[in-house]
Length: 268
Image 1 (cartoon, rainbow, N blue to C red):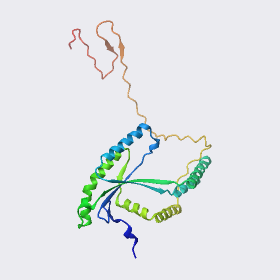
Image 2: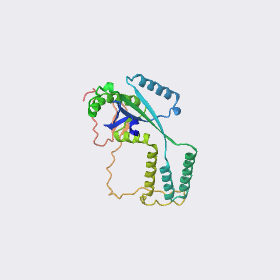
Image 3: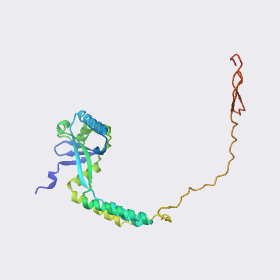
Image 4: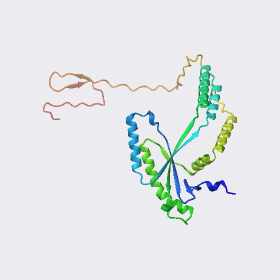
């Protein structure tokens, strides 16, 4: 009987790389996104030109992957319930409950999706030229080719205002497990949320309730008793007197200032 693993194109995941069965090796970069529709027209044109410059600068193929996944917000709703239960202020409790109902209504009427963006860089077996060598030799050869390509793509994405980085081995395993086992990953997330729900909450010291929601208590800073130290005397202010004739004179000048009188001939 044919096993399901024979239909999976991946052979192994080592050194933050994906080894495929056809002899090629891939590198996965995750990147952030930008809300293009909310930008000004000049900013949109700038991003389009930067993206066009990025595509024109590539001398190797890339694969852009956009993955949409339904977001599980049950743990967030549970967090809002706990926050409303711990709230001692009646007004804040009602506002938290209304916000929780608002979020629940959005979830029931719409599908909350989480979009993730990836860029895959691949080096073929022909480029590697190591058909009969071990995996370590293939990885060393692939790193010499993929690392400059990765740095170039990350640099070009930075010009677009996007933050990107390479996925490590653990993140790659979780990503491919989630892709090929969506039901199992959802069950794992639900079990994690239930375990968090059963955990006892950390008891925190309650804050003093205000007398009125619109008149909160005034919190004054702590006063620290310090020994009084005498302040140094302030220097006398310099008074400028307009001269009757000749050079201006400065009087009532306190130390450490020194004023030398100038002679009529301009010398010392």
